[in-house]
Length: 258
Image (cartoon, rainbow, N blue to C red; front, side):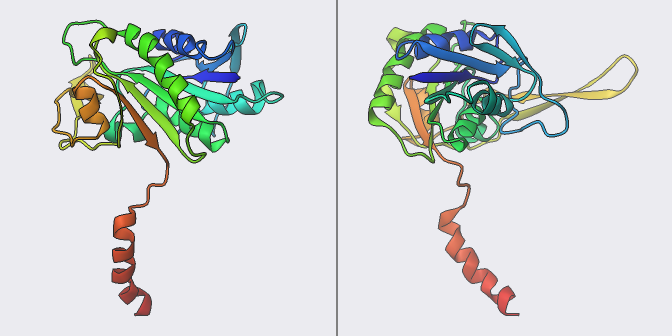
């Protein structure tokens, strides 16, 4: 099995080393094509107005001056064009990708780009900041990642679906199991904005996220991570609000007739 690895934290990120260990639990044919620099929050952005350059960093390892989606596209369509990958893994992200975060995540976007190109894809993320002052427990992904990956490969998933896996911010022995979840939605926005002034008197801003916990429903990715379980969420990119679609069509019929 040929596996292509990518991420949004950059080709030298520690999570990518963990991801390579996870991938090697099922194959020795591992290729890495990832952004040269961190591209967190880039979602599915692709570079259209500038050249995208690629540099070989070592055997089967390439750095892309672009976004996660650029990296996956180049990996599939150019670097591995003669023998495309059978599987794409993205991550392991330094931080959780849950709920509404998934639409902004470059980690998830790399997996979606793989799915769009016809390659089964999984995104992996490691939750953090739930244990104040403690380091990121990368060992949790090393222990639980191979288990989840092997189970997913055995079960399979639809072609129009990507799998979003989040490891809780717990040591491996403290993880409370694996749960298949739905995408949650926080009851309060966590986006933050900090305004500062530079030495010339001009304003600038830092954009980030607060760590305020929400009150998620049972069965969601948020609840699973809060309670220390590995969250496995099947995602797709159909953003249609199907429950409202018929109602909206009925309401807009008046406009159509008038």
